[in-house]
Image 1 (cartoon, rainbow, N blue to C red):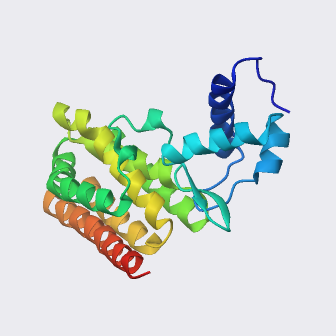
Image 2: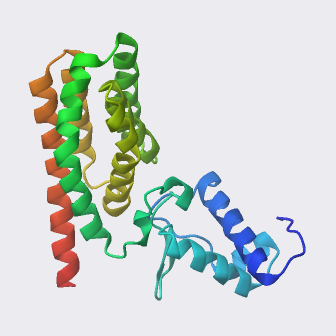
Image 3: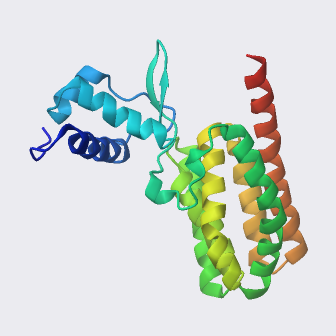
Length: 235
């Protein structure tokens, strides 16, 4: 049972919202899974159902939860606002946002991968290889791979040794998270293969290969988003 300080309803709702987010992350409740119903959450947190509804509403507004009428409330993202420094969660059309993010990624990440071939240290190459392995293992084991996927792309960005790219890392991270939360595990093999191709090119100091592999990686992802957005419009 959670213990909350006596406070007005608005502050209590915020406190329960934080506790619910903590529950989602530590249980964990994976993206695509349903959270317990209002009765169960009210009992778990020792509060009224109206307070639970307020907490759920708060996480829905932050893009963490989605209420599906007649089905329940589902986790659609494991990122809180603290992980969204660019405020992208305010955009309602997630497919449009994801495609716009891909436009930016295609402008930046192939060249970032190319720079990484030139400037990555041996220690950074080992880290990149390890992250590539970890993303693959998590994918194949059916576990949440998003955090390690973000670390993989962050590592490549840092290998570029470009200080402006360092500043842009939150943009890349937000793009990776937005895509992963929309597609879940639909591109598992394509992601594994292209991550490996990017990694091998950087390890071998092959800038053209790294650039091409990153373009292929982003192209697979964009094509899937286009397909999903089109199917969603037809419903």
